[in-house]
Length: 389
Image 1: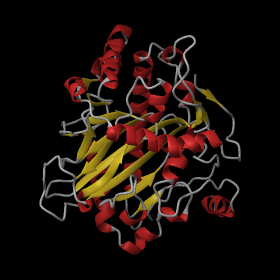
Image 2: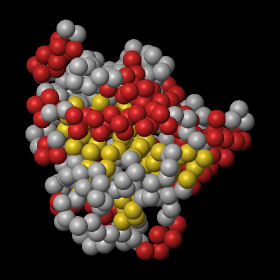
Image 3: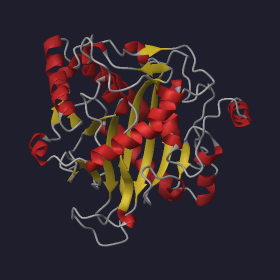
Image 4: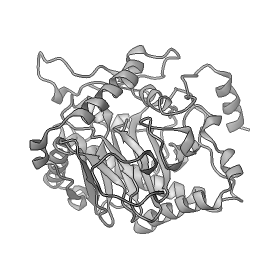
């Protein structure tokens, strides 16, 4: 089951580290190597209407949860519509993404560079990170949970990935990006509410109490990204043949956390790995979010739910913008197999891991220099002082 601890120990957990590096790499390679043509017949990305899930009737909510379960047993991906996040809020965040990458100078972005911290927050140039070792054509801006952006106000117990408490977000100056933070806050609050609602449905889908994950999401991890994918330098192609490095926006990977809520502009780019080893190009469904299972849910369910490998390739002639929100539990949670997902006498496929540390180690593997586990470093002392200055 999942348990929580008051504070992360200062000493890294070797099992968590091993699982984040060797375990994650082995899983990715196993998925990329698999070729099950017959299983493609069951592969689909359903559109799930969330409207009934807001009903007072448990039967209505359970019906939606059953649809989610079916999707998680096959592709690990689904769309949600009638989710409650306003169109103006969704349009607003995509506009901010475009503004950030188009209007800020390189010098202004450099001051926000993720290399200045240990948590992967701030501006992320293409040359600094690679999720799968590819040359990636993308630019990102990353931000994380703040109690001020939580509609509940939080519980005052939020910890960063490494157990520290300072605010690690790197925001542009107000004079450089007027209204930027306000739009971010509005969007973040909306998707955080939606994520908590979805977690209740995930609980129902696993024959758990609807509130099972509630105590684990009172100060949840939730890293969000603004992403920019430029048009390809070469002629677009829909071929299943191996792409040149220049065309890859984001390399093949699985997400680390519980699940991801993805908002995109009209330009397609998401590709999902099918059991046959072929790539499925995800169509854009208006007014929807794309939801996909992450590694935590896969581990919690003992592999029942699929943390499906995917990538981003912009094959159009237009820029692509997207805003993924990676929803986690409180970072001081230990993730281990759920009681409804393991039979008596059965051994779990996955070892218990520390949530925040696992994500930090996975992020560490994507960077040129690495963030590292630096809970006792002078960098944290300086940053914590700066955040309160």
